[in-house]
Structure formats: C-alpha cells, structure tokens
Length: 432
Image (cartoon, rainbow, N blue to C red; front, top):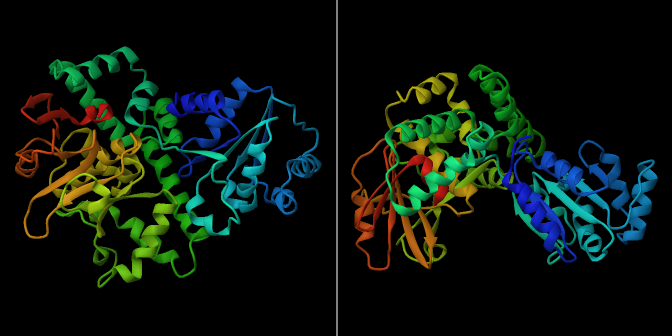
C-alpha cells in the first residue's frame, strides 16, 4: 500500500469532527477510493459503499425525502444484508457528483450522530449547478492530489530520516553533501517521469520499466479525454480537448502565458475560455495568474486575463510529450525552451500539493518576470525557477523592495544563501 498524507487527514477528521461529513475532492485516479477503503478497514467494524457511477440505480434512494431514517430505509432495501450499526459504521458515497441529491443529503446525514459519512467526487466543479442545496457548515472539504515528491520517496523506499535530514539542511541553510545531492536529483528526475498517479507508481515499483509506466500514463490520459467527451457540453467537447492537448506546446514557448492562438490559429478567449474553466473544474489543469504589482495581498492584484496553465501531474505532462522525452529527462540531455516550461510545471506541482495558490509576475512593458509568487507572514515570497542555473535579475529587483523579506532561486544545484535570496535545489521545494 502506498503511504499517503491524506490518511492522516482522515484520522484527524474522525477524531475532531462534530456533525460534519467529509467531502474529498480531486481528479480521477489519484487514489481517493482506495484511501477511504483502507481507512474504513482500519477504523470501522461496518462499511457501506455506494458508487453512483457504477451503480446509477442507487440514485433513486435519494429521490424522495432526505430524512435520515428514510434514506436508511431506501438504501437497505436496495443493498441486501447491510446494516447501519450505530457508532461503528462508515457510509461511503463514491463519485457523488453523479447524484446531486446525495450531496444535498450530506447536511441531514451530518446532523445525525450514529454513523460517519465520507463522500468523494472527481467532477464536482462540473455538476455543482445541479445541487439543490450545498450543505454549508455540514461538510469538511479536503482536496486530494496525486502523490507528491515526498510520498514518491516513501514509495521507492527512501527512509524518512533521510528526508528529515534534508529538511534540516533546508531550514539551517546547510549545503547538501555532493553525492547525496546527486542522488536526490536522480530521484527527482524519476519522479518527473513517473509522476504521482498511484497506478503509475505501482507499475513502476512492480516492473521498473518505463515503457510500462508510459503505457499506464497513456491509459489515464485517454480516460481524461474520454471524460471530456462524456461530460463536456456538445459545443465544448472538441474545444476542451484541443485546449488540454495544447499544454505541451504552450509550455514550450519562451513566454508560457497561455495563448489561445496556440490551440487554433486565430483562437480567442471568447471562444475557448469556458473550455479552460471546464478543465479546471474537472481538476485536470491548474491556473497560474499574473499579479502586477507583486505585492501583498496577491489576490488584490490579479490580472484575470493573463494566466498560465499547468497539468495536474508532472508525469502526465512528460507522457504528453511522448516516450522519447522520458529518455531526455532521465539523462538530463533536454535543451531549449521546452525544458524551462517542464520545470515550471514541476515546481507548480510541488506548490499546489503544498496548498499554495499559483501566481506569477510579468510586466507588459519589460522582460522582468518571476515564475511564482507565494505568501508567507503577510509578505510576498518570489520564486524564480531555473532548469539549470543562471542569473536572476528579475528576482533580485523584487528583493530590493522593503516589504519583501526573502525569495527563492530554484536550480539544478545545491543550497546557498546570499542576503535575502535563498538558492535551493529543485527537490527542496517540498520543504517550502
């Protein structure tokens, strides 16, 4: 079993909840169903699972009264030999986006105190308009992602004491021994090839074969494209598909601002913007908005019309470039602007899984640009990303501002510090 940080969140919810259900959101195939089943196995004597996509007939149980006693009656009549054992039962509502009334029912299920309820959904942002009443105050939400780099290290057998030692280096600005640094950079390149999808990581652990890893990733990408074909509106299907498939080209440009003309010659925001929102709501992509000026609070200075798009998993992005890209990444032989965009997506992957919203900084009237901006202690923290090394004139300029306490230069190198600028290797982004 892959160790997941989400499991700790589930335990915390169980120990601290008060009249609230748990709603786990996230893209398909990131391990939501598996983690709930494992949690139930270890914490409950009685487990009832309803998957509204595999068993659409179960939607009828939520068509009438949402009173809990009535729901129990409607569920038990449709699933033979199950019981709701007080204080020992977990009711699991999987793919809840397929049954909007079940989402509404979470309020009433939360008010009862006899059994626990966990719901999961992968397309909640798509179907929210069909929900008659969102149970505000009665559901605790958790956004789950594919495995992050630290979880990947656990999966391949890296002892947690090693990670703890590296974190100590990070926190105390101590350079990492050269051999250790090289090994960690190798693991990072493996993570870039494999990504965090549980099925892909398991295939990697079973076979150590990148061809089979690539095939598993391709299956997931095909499933995502099938979701677009199944759930997007008729008018948006081809446009959403083309937007998604354009991401590798978008990131290969010197300026990775999303360009609708890259999707289709003459393409415009008016034609394609809704399709990008659909992909975001399906958790397939992440928006990164331009903030000018780069000041706290960042949300006050967002330019909604200027954004970059990153995939929800670095391994899937590498797969989209084709199998040969895996060899180029593994041997560190990739050159050109495509490399910069890939490393941007890598750092975006780290930051999103750490819970940061994505922002960047770029002025229209100059080449001044910083790949990411985050907030800490009511101050902006600029982050400049280098696929190798290089100068950081834009970062240096921002660091001259009195209200900016420090910033990061992320490189293919080692750790160091010079005044307000902290240089770290790519893999240490997991500690930001």
